[in-house]
Length: 234
Length: 296
Image 1 (cartoon, rainbow over the protein chains, first blue to last red):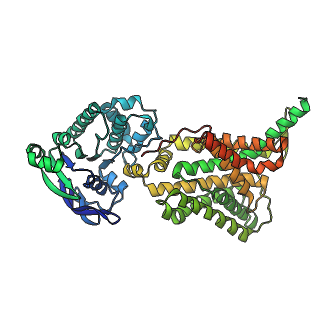
Image 2 (image 1 turned 60 degrees about the horizontal axis):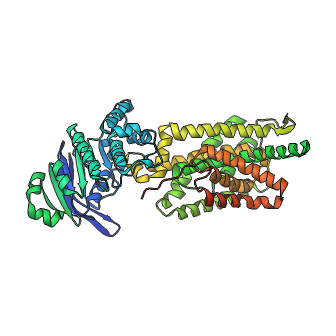
């Protein structure tokens, strides 16, 4: 479904990704692991069009997307839940969700999708009229995911959904990720909590200083003690 | 207090509301551009003046009837704002806020001097669809033109509120002003939203200019004082809400008039600055604003 071919990217003169190739098969959950600064977030930014790669190509459904603006990529069916959630703090929860569907052309089904998001995250229904900035961190994460789902993505990019959240909330978020995937949405998950990510993922890639150093089925990586210690640090 | 004194005080308030309604109109344009692009446009008043001159030219040089002239002016103003954003503001959009402020100050003097060059500095009368007379309420004299301006300001306030809060486009514009990365990620074409914000607020400024011109006369510096008071009004009411802009603009007009009548006319000029400062120190979000949350 998604394929990166030898993608390199940079912020100014700082090289952030070097020759990254990876593949996300339809229907799967793929985890992207690595320490801080390894290039995980940069990879997602390249896929969603926020950052243009300096070399290489990104294909979605066989179509090259790395020269498209973000709004065109959303319309193709790729939604990005960014690092730090980035909800519209001064807008209500309801407005945030409605804007999630901004790129869509089929306006008719929006209320049904809103219902689906409210079923996934009942707390958002209660807080519908509240300003997003007044939500707790966990609720904002749910809103960010809900907003992305409103675009009806076929591929969901999740950047550190567990960052800074209480363990109980993290558990709930991961349960929801499983459910979203079971409903047919492919997921590319960036996580620092490798242990948790490997539990939901089918395959995983490990990044270090902008390069893929390891890839394989999640179950295998989980068993591989040495790799775990040297690359994942736990 | 004797009845005569009370009446004259009330008359001062009425005159203040009349001046204030013009501040309020321009303050609405400031609120619109702030809500849609997160920029305070110091050239807002000059763009309003410039587009009012376009209306004047259509009316008096080319003999275009009033309503078509207004319609053409609004279209011109929209395109002007749209293009200014595209050509002049866009290159500094990623730069620090100060750069954008400097650009709008530059636009201020460009529009001012071009208007002076084309139309000269002799004040010109501007036709009004409303007759010049006055009406009397409870012993107070109220100008028909003032009532017309105030009425228009209130209608625009309601329309602007509905646009920003109830339409998807207005919501998307606010979202763009607040968080551009997130706006991009949900598929909002951010560049087009910013151009639209400039275009719409320029059109709103043109309305303000055309409504004000019959009262304050048309000349290149007509908005210099108005912008300052409008800015004070917008800050006073809170840059975030159309209602605040109207209330703030009117309040500034009334305070200005009362201060001039009761204390000293000389103090009027400093008043706007004093009010801006006082509001920013005591209640930065304005009287009717809500606290703006910034994401880290």
